[in-house]
Length: 427
Image (cartoon, rainbow, N blue to C red; front, side):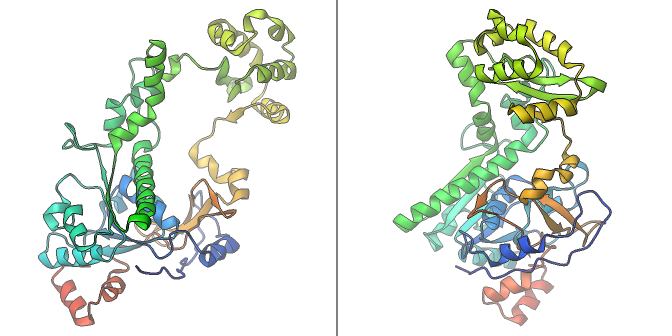
């Protein structure tokens, strides 16, 4: 195993683009000083897009040395436009990059040598792809029985396993798009929820396998899949049907579990989410807003009664709340401790006082594109360890940034490295 040393955070540059800010130097330095839980673990990652890279990012943020193997022409994710523009810098921080041509015999041999040095290997290619290069679990585990091998697929082994899957594909076939959209208008969730969670489940499996390896001395293969992840997400709706005999309706037409739990349009057309999810919260809600008549009305006397009367209750609440401003309701609900939320856009979160105060954003330097070298802020994992957030130790790497360093670490001499480069086996 290779011990991870202190890593360079890179040069910080100012920019006028949204989300750009100087790095919190105390946070950055504390991150580099800390002993992280996966220090000393080597992970070799044969991944692209979002799912596999998310798994690698989880392990990297927790201190593992994660080596991203990408084609010598570079991971195509580096140059996506539109909604894909943030994919590479978001999911490839704290990693090293090694560019290898797996189609070359010499390159595939380098990849196998690299994989043999790993504690964990990650991949997210179609079934059978890794076996063509001798990089599948069966081949690698013969060399290293302690290896943990995490495969990220569209589907677990079964009738669908050879289908090509995308987040949107499994959202459509797995009921999530149906639940998110209006009746007759299936709509994918507004984030790569299955890709990200599928990668996280891969990381959870890897961590469990590491614990078991500490007991048995042997590794194992872990498999995570988009479709099964999506089915897990809609499991609550499946159980609703199994228990009640009534199918779950799409979110806009759903039968809510709570009487007051909705978005309200208020003064000047602003919108705000308000909720009262218990009988005690309903009492506070009515007292705070001066709705004594609703509080005393027996047809609204319990949460389940309010759920049954939502068709009559909500129009009354919408009419009464329309005279209030969103700011006044925010202040009121915060003061009395009721659930509420402004309707925010992602870009507005860069100015969120809570995220700024709690260190939820960190600076990264962009490795590619027109803004290469510029610094923007990205989101960190939503938990702390020993009271601190897991930060950025290594910037998202440029293509093949660490190839020579890693080859030397595998025992290749300078002439051998030059020969591999001239053969375009590595870059």
